[in-house]
Length: 149
Image (tube, rainbow, N blue to C red; front, top):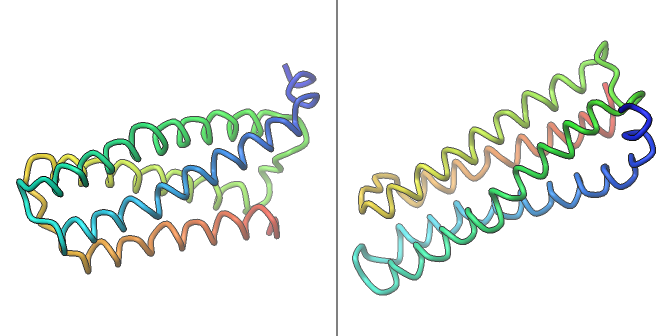
């Protein structure tokens, strides 16, 4: 299995990077939609339904598949011989950050369900603050992988 993974390494790495880009785009955009949904759109209006449609499609058609493919290609990279040195700190910081990013993804999904139920209690300011969380995780992940401390 290791030989096959080593042979397809450039493809796996490329697909992992593309998946991460798509996932991060959604991770940054969905909370922004929530900000506008809270601050501009009233509940039960035509615009409310439009925002719910945009939020659902972003989550289901882009973010979920991108998260799954990020994990799939990431695990393939982990099992590719010679790629990860577990005696270093970077794979652990990256792994923890990816787990936290996955938690944030699930948190966004739960917030979307609250909008659907008409039960959102968070403010636009809170969504703006929460939108900084994936930025911090992204920085940790990129520096972990590139600097390999």
